[in-house]
Length: 371
Image (cartoon, rainbow, N blue to C red):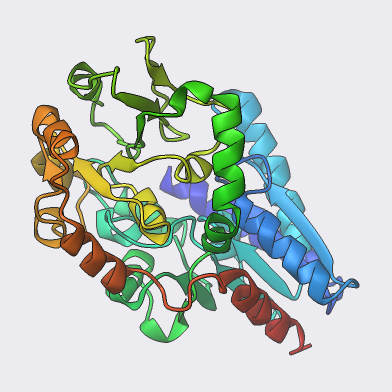
């Protein structure tokens, strides 16, 4: 495997060396994503803002979520080759996850690489923090693939997360810019609109306490969310379940909704409480001031196999539960710890909420102006 990767890197660098003969376009921005095969919300908002600021800007987006099997590998190989040409001819590259050739190849000095990670905080450990852990990646393989190298700028959330961004990306604080993601602006601007759309599509939600359950992705750890459903009184409550894109959840119990036409980030607008575990959606909920409870039936196991950057029990006292019955009882008896929630919001959210898209666009445009 190691020899094959070394040979592949050598071939890619030869091909890229040829592609670098093409000149850089001073107005060209490249978007890269392995998170989805469609343009994400963050990219969509950034694209709109950039085009508004400069109608002459050229934006190329390559979004490819790799599927399994030979077809999936072939599809990603084609996307990779396309990205290499555009990396060689762009002034700025913005990505929201690890894209191998961004980190493996040696780029022209005229290219600025901006990592716009797909979460606005680092609740759970990731990247270099989880190498060789059961839920992480192989350290040897990750280093061979130069994981998370070549980033000039990393877009981060609140400053309290900075030390964890540095550990995750194996980088230094001087590369971080604490402006948050465009989705923050979307959450604030579209809350009322999204609420109306969701109630119109699901009128049964009206008059009930709406709970949104959105757990994180677990690699090698089994989901065990069913007890949560068993302890909910569906005459008073409505439950919306949104599984992680990498780990779907199915539930046929009456009163449980999945709302497939709406994303979890939009469903925050209609929920009265978010229930999650180690997902960064908790930070997005904090943006909208949505009380959040943590159902962490596997806290010790997850901490051992993956790792957490913060102690949820200390940061959110009275809001973290391994027992779903006790969690629901807090909601039923209106005993939520709002003081802890306010401290969490103050500590972990970026400053100047509602300005992330414009701030990120300025960063991109500033680096276009270097040409």
